[in-house]
Length: 213
Image (cartoon, rainbow, N blue to C red; front, side):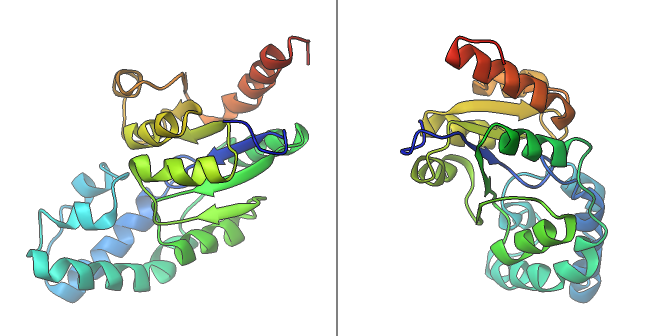
């Protein structure tokens, strides 16, 4: 869906798309487990990043304890994860490519908004709007409201959100989903990493205008 003002708007997912949250997530999960007296299978849970935290906790805690455990995870997350989490190679360049094309950058993530903003501030991401705590097809409403025409993510649920919004789904292979899974979900484009995004965007915009860029 084009921006109402006619300009380019590109949405990005955060975890495992722009930032590598594996080490920070694992450290926070380990700290939470120590507080609760539970040995979470950290490696297994870290490999499944994408769905909301409460979904990941569901196999390891009684249902009644999940909300408070999730709240505690988010409370201790800044101490254990923000400074330990790097941007993926090409993340800043991907955002800069949107800027160079005169576009707006919208961050649409399932992450707790305050913690997402801490990552944005720490890593200096140049974004226009951050929308947190939206997942899967729920991302469609935000993408449509912001006038996005492209959404970049790493998970099949990011693809679902893009398709529900009627925008171009671009997937990177830096998350837990394979090329085959992403293509089966219906993504339009698969990139190995964000470093490939600027060239793809230039070609994509050139095709849209019908003129070389």
